[in-house]
Length: 218
Image 1: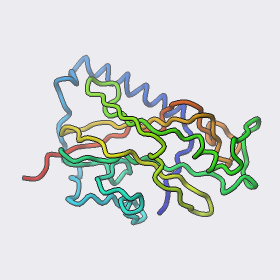
Image 2: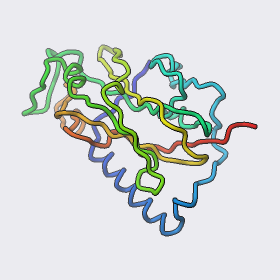
Image 3: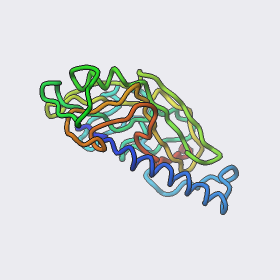
Image 4: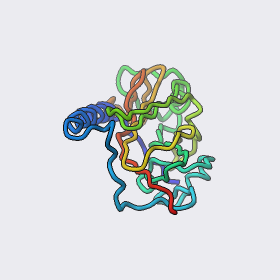
């Protein structure tokens, strides 16, 4: 499959999350999210089966070994109320090996090959639904969230997804993903820290992403 490469736009992603929280607070002055849910619109209703098909035709459920409905990729952001769902997120790619790695000045990896370095530092993810609202829910997952490492165009990519999550209520929600690393990691694909590196600790990896839950068909 064609992977989605998450370039480390950590500061822009964090800014987006902060703006989302701020926006939620402003909206609360007009409509209290504790008592109101955005109505279900006439968006694409999820298919009856659980298969999430990527733009290149790959069945992500088969590729990642997931039986539940996947939410995350642009074509897979709807589910039915009552369904457990799995949050997938952009993959992380690195240089193929340490001999061909190109790092920012001053950075030294812990392990020679960049993907090995990433895996050794990856501690897990945290998935937050409805960040900054009274409906906020958070679930934390460990290293098992790294589902598969597969090559594409000569580079290895780590594919990430949560364990199954409980269903959300009918309507529109947001989903934000945080990543945790034990130490700073750079991918070996270039010298720019803002593009090629991830920081130590917990940081916003992707989101907020709008997702929708629909009442099941009668």
